[in-house]
Amino acid sequence: MARMIRIFDTTLRDGEQSPGASMNIEEKVLVAKQLARLQVDVIEAGFAFSSPGDFEAISRIGQEVEGPIVCSLARARPEDIKKAWESLQKASKARIHTFLSTSDIHLQYQFRMTRDEARSRAVEMVQLAKSYVDDVEFSPMDATRSDLTYLCEVVESVIAAGASTVNIPDTVGYTTPQEFGHIIRTLREKVLHSEKAVFSVHCHNDLGLAVANSLAAVHAGAGQVECTVNGIGERAGNASLEEIAMGLRTRRDFYDADTRIHTEEISKASRLVSKITGMVVQPNKAIVGANAFAHTSGIHQDGLLKEKSTYEIMRPETVGLTQSRLIMGKLSGRHAFREELIHLGYALSDDEINAAFERFKHVADQKKEIFEEDLEAIVSEAATRVPEHYSLKGLEVRSGLGQQPEAMVELLVDGQTITRTKEGDGPVDAVYRTIADMVQTKSRLLSYVVKAITGGTDAQGEVAVRLEEDGETVMGNGADTDIIVASAHAYLNALNKIRSLLDKRAMGDKKITLC
Image (cartoon, rainbow, N blue to C red; front, side, top):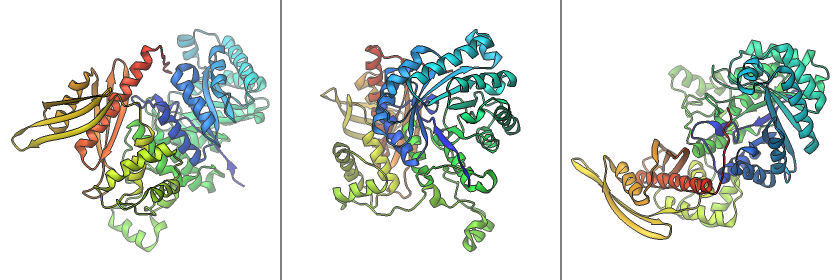
């Protein structure tokens, strides 16, 4: 019987460390619910000590998301571990994950500690965490650049102190599959009572080897893989959840291992995380890229028509790439709308249903058919709204060959209606210049991305923008069959997030960024 490998998802913690990928609390809860539908074993919901926002997100996920263990990261400091416990008190299944470096380069230059001091601190903090929860994980950061004998000593000490999971991080993406497999085998063979803990791995993708290293570790006996949806994360990212899950599922014959991941939810999770973070999935990305199941070669097409297994090692249906079961349109009622959302796995409150249905009717008036991708865009937009200090009431744009683009925008700004007209280099630029003048923003537009949600000339256009102001970077999203309107909604969504963040900062919010 195949071993079951635990999937520890860190999209909401390490994934959020991708530049510009910060999520608000509602967005984190939405992603966590999708991770529960994926049936991940552990959700690392955040770093409780880093900010009140992370603390609240962990607390809400612990109360609202059923199924997975909910975990908070904590540095090897008493105040961090205490804060992690406070954020997890209402979770039915809680884990504290604490960490401290073991590599000489980190201990000497970053932590200013000796090896003996680091080992003692690790033991003390594991014991402290164990006094709060039964489920404690310890990570010797930068393990793959650590002296292997010393690493064995630290791992043996923290297991004796009560760590039930020991994670071996390739923090800077330095190792290779052969080397990493050797490290895992050595730890399992030489560490006293190694069988009392599950060995986990957390691989970064700096050399493009995160998934390969993780799978090599599984082959060497690791029982948990830490990964993120779409492989997002610090620098070049983390091991990709979808690639780990499908790699083990497809090559179960080789690894003699599998996961409990409900793979049919993979594509939905990928689209949701991409939309919320604004990080577009490259077309040639394995499993979830637009080209992953596309075949252009005539030879390949001929083989597929005769027998799918000739050129497909996975069926698209296994990762959730299916046709819409129910074609929705402008004549569909609220009940059919709610039922289709339930079919797609969304459980919304009455207020969220009402907001989403209003948006659905607007889109349905402009499109002949509404597909699953449209509904997901509508739901995520309704469920991740922030307080609307600025909302769009009216928009007219004049543009054409030889004509200076001009936009007339009507906004509701803190309850007051304002109308203004300005010119720009193009229709979107004219709209953005007008809005910026109306709300007196000092933000900078870092990126502007447009894509069609579905095919056809009546497809909704989805716009993602990234704004920066006073050290805060946010994503804004908007969708509409009119790309100019979608652009305005995305810009206003980002401006509302910026306003909320700056308001919180004024009230004393703080945020710690991990190295």
